[in-house]
Length: 323
Image 1 (tube, one colour):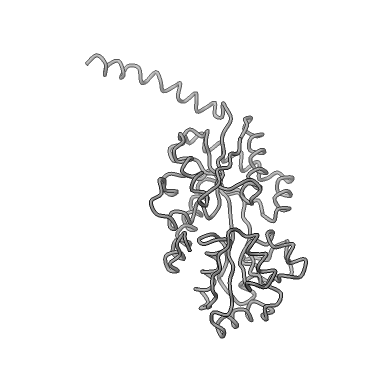
Image 2: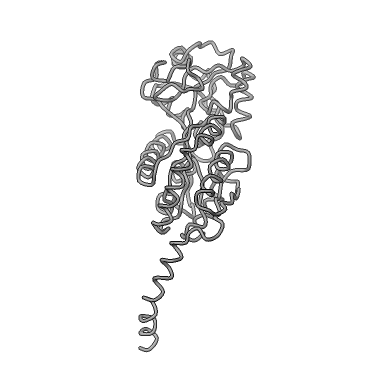
């Protein structure tokens, strides 16, 4: 009876110390795990945003790249870290809205184990074709795909990634027969598009900008509900004959479920402030992405809707991580 009583007497005195530790967060550097190598889109944006967050919280945020398995290696390490706010994960739509539906036997569950501190950006995808493709607009492309089944090859940056899922959604919503050709990344896919070896892609504009400006690739539509400032003369998919079809990418900063609410609130506030910085907004625009803040509650609701949307596409299309 002595030991339980001693514990019972001691525990209340420990609570103020725990609260004080949370109140001092961050008292040491914070790790931010990324599931992709340096120089990729997620890494570039994270290295723009995180220093501004660090400035506002008065502590270093150290980015750690753990590339491999479409981000699963980094997410596995993240899930095994402590829920104290000193290890975070910065991920994209593929990591956070697709992984659970695409892979089996994961050591983590992005819905059960992760919670958003906030969304940081969004970017639009475009429907583009090689210059020698006969279709001159989106309506003509869709008609050609219907009347010439299997004649068009649609490239993607890899099976199960955002560009693949967008292509499958496009095909299913409008009854199009386009053959999927997966690549290991956007760069080789766009290279083959520019060379005419594949005819169609739905991917980020910033990745194909050089090929477009050189005249080897043509953008037919922006997969967005509104026209984009980078391409003011390019119609949206709705305007061009594909009503309701939108596809894009986004990033979120995630904490582990169980992280103290005070920590999440401080992260949310720092993100909100950082993403109002005109210099950061301009720097992100130069990368072809838009600063887009959603706080914890709105980000969680948006993430839930995205998971539902892309899980349905994966299941109806029979997509697997292998192809």
